[in-house]
Length: 386
Image (tube, rainbow, N blue to C red; front, side, top):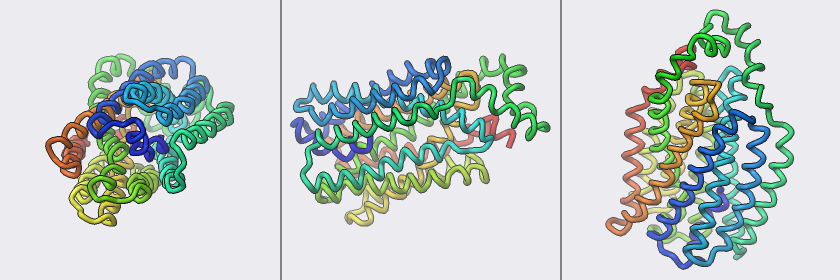
């Protein structure tokens, strides 16, 4: 996905479209992801990650080649729809699997998994900047990455956990280490709180999903507009502009590698509250700065602030009802991807009324809203048991 992001300006030029048209076409990327998430969520609960993750990874890899081949607006739209479908299938499957692993560890590890996703963004920024400087075509670069993705999917499949792992593996740990906290163990959840999740889960999960929408819209702004911001507003070269997303992804990677320890020490509420506040400050600097170095710094602070926010929301959704972790994660991730839909749809048309850098102040406001609403994570059962 990072390789697609750094090639957005080249693909936009090849397809002969402007920023506004690109903003509307990016809706199809999020729409495809939303559909894929809703399809795979229940399947992950039924068949397990060992089945759905490799298939989603293969679909995502194959469809990655399509945007590089598009030469018109309609072919690019179709390519983005299929790429979004593959990405959505993989996204929910691997996050549901991460909930399994985190339940077995009995401590926060979700942010570390998201950090490896960010590492991909860092590598994409570096490799993409180099291939763009060498005038490689997007089609060649994306096809090479797609082949690598297929290889990784095949190698990873045998190591994934079976569907029964979240039910059987953590129980001994819970019974040994949490005797004084029976409500937090899987057996107690299954036997004493079945009516409770059925009554309260929809409202709680949809609030988490709404926060995910706000935060992922802000992440989508970095994905879709950071490179174009430096390229069009600050007149940076294509290779330098690609580093805007690189700064964002690098800071997000470092932040996610540290977020699990921070969450274990101060709790998920503080991670979301102060992280979203820092993100708002960073994006404000990036949007208003007239200098490339300070703009890159602002994008980096933006990434660091957002780094721990989405993992806390996904983890809360997955642990709230272990028997329906995949479905709940799909709800939160699906509505979050509506943020990916809304970002291009709002920012693109806004550039007709105001410059791109001023349009970026909208996600600043959304970060502040998410910071204000962070108290919802206090209701997370894991937070109460801690």
